[in-house]
Amino acid sequence: MGNVYFGFSHVGSVAVAVLIILAVMSVFSWAFIFYKWLQLKGLDRKNKVFLNKFIETKDKTSLEAFAKASDSIAGKLYLLNKESSSSAFTFFEMIARELEGGFPWLASVGATAPFVGLFGTVWGIINAFNNIGNVQSVTIATVAPGISEALITTAAGIFVAVPAVIGYNILHTKLSSLLNELDGFLEALSR
Picture 1 (cartoon, rainbow, N blue to C red):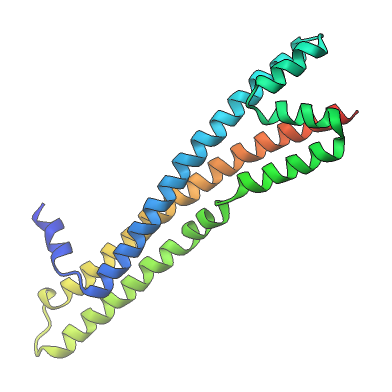
Picture 2 (tube, rainbow, N blue to C red):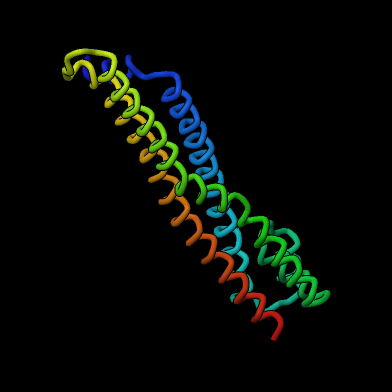
């Protein structure tokens, strides 16, 4: 425990700023990941209920009533397609753009967090060399604070990037699957 405290007790103001930036990136990434996971899971569940009803129901009147009561994208596509296929297609494109919102930001966090941490690493190493230049004899105590600062920011950058990249890949795959299913449904409706 004392070793961990030693690592944080010598962190300079630039490294603290880097750690704060990484903490903000991490909080927003996790919030987006949880929000998007719940959103996509809910939409997928609602669509599956409607699509099962669509397959099982032969009565168009009861299916239309179910679509109106349903809070699914598939149900809305079904109703809009009855009016015109172009309005259903426009609605689908609008929903796809809306659901893809935030993904570029999450990808950016995954791509840039290691470099933000690397900036802190470089700064820590610069501090270590400055400490070497300020003393006559070089000991581990001279360079340890700068090196520990460098390692802390490096680890923090990786800690932020890895969940963002994994979250992006899992969520984007889930979104692609949902959109492909809806696109197939829309094509089937227009036939």
